Image (cartoon, one colour):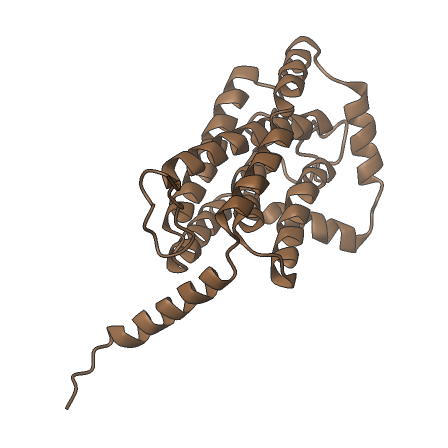
Length: 255
């Protein structure tokens, strides 16, 4: 009588998941083309962030920041308010920590081992960089006497930590789906969902009165630069450490 082990169903499920992922993975040349296209666009953020940081350091406040906040907060619909709160929710601790771990575990379980490790690094780099820049700039958050503040936060304002976290982690996962998956309805839905989160989180931070528009803009710019660095690190690491991983391994150069 054959001996039954509890690991067999788990192994079968894991193998099935990895085979399904392989079937949806684009070819290596296509992945490289998509990567170069995204990197070229993100590098344009370097000069813009440097200029914005200089202005934030030298000018105490921008009148346009107040105008933008009041314009966004003029939408007093309960539904809009609920959506803005919901979009910001994943960026607060411990939600951000739990979501990061879940994303890494899901990627690893589908055979994307280096992608899982790189997603953890993306979240850590964006968070640490944000805290360092905030301590250097030390810009105060919007005050309650100027705008509606839904919850007073004690940390500094520039750049927005939520936006940098979303760009760093969700932006990296967006890149993985964009670069690795074949064109399909599921790929389109995933890209649309993650892209919407990244775009709308900036509006939510302004609407909730916890950041100025310039904080949000600076976070998108710096977050984009960190994202480029993470993508380059990811591509460098795949060629050296995860060549034989179960799904989307690095294809060796033909002689």
